[in-house]
Image (tube, rainbow, N blue to C red; front, top):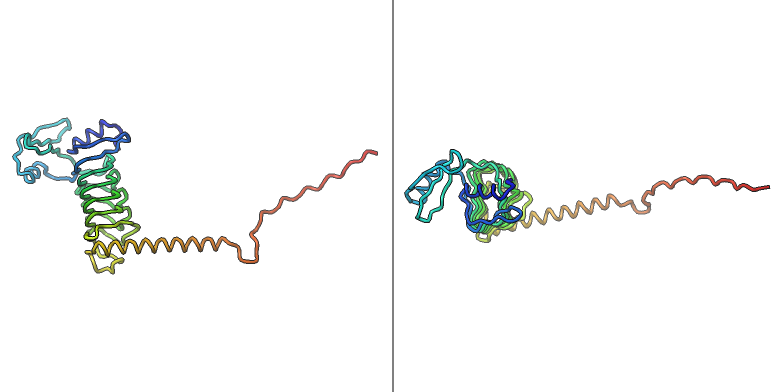
Amino acid sequence: MLETREEIEQWLVHHNVSNYEIRDDLTVDVNTGVYLNYVEDPIKDYAFTTGAPIQEIYACEYPDVGRIGDFGDGHPLIYEFKPIVSLPVRFGKVKGDFIIRDNGLTSLEGCPTYVGGEFDCSYNNINSLIGSPLEVGERFSCENNELKNLNGAPKKIGTNLYCFANPLEELGIIETQIGQNGRFICTPLEEFGHTENDIAGKTFNAKVQELKRIREERALFESSVAKVLDTPPLGTTAPHAAEPQQQPRAKPKFKL
């Protein structure tokens, strides 16, 4: 993680993040969206997306990096950057989208705790969702990664949860609830009979609650068994520590 406010500001500007606030603990809140998805040819992508002519391409303070500006039309500046393999900045609350797809991430460390819009970490090398936001206002996308379970998934997702094209084996230990009108799109899992890959939000939420109840009942049972094993059988007493042997009393000496 970057350790100074100046380094963080430089990184944010370079990656076209604006309308942000850096807290005292160096966590970054953003009042709009954060778009860190890697684009192989950002110049062509910028022109295609906005339809605006690019007036100037010039070098900035970063060596061998192009800065694209379409000045005067309200479009933001765009920098070219390499695929991100780890976030050097820790985000807090992001009111808009947080898009970090098509990079080389192996971890979600540094991702926001709250995202008001869409969260998309697809097409990376992530093997755990630990570090995900606790709450996502719209959809959560993590497809095309290396996930075997959804441990660490957000507790609340506003609409859909996309996690297909992962080597998923189980839902895992999660408490995720998605919108009642949302969908769970995934590889067929045992929890849903190995057949369905498009699950209604209501069905998904009920299954998560059922798995949580089973885990809690199992933990209570195992705790009860442990207590029974630690309790001596009826009619016996717990072994006591051996009492220290008393030293023989010295014979009193009488003066004749």
